[in-house]
Length: 88
Image (cartoon, rainbow, N blue to C red; front, top):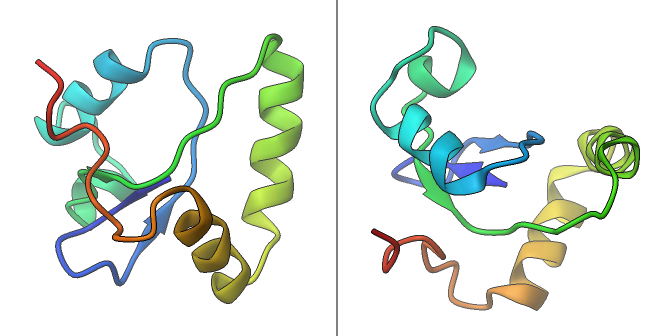
């Protein structure tokens, strides 16, 4: 899950290469939601062994309320720190 500068927007997506996808979002390489809302901070992620499982989980999470998503994020990342801030 990614968010913007003031955490007012959440984005949920699936990728097979998280560092590459974050780079693409941060550099606005593609038009769309993340470019429009400047969604660049990684607060939560999950790993899956199979793409089908990841897509099912993505759909499930997108159906959750914002409050339920916030609770999930807070369990893994209580300070809502950008988990990719130390990545190169």
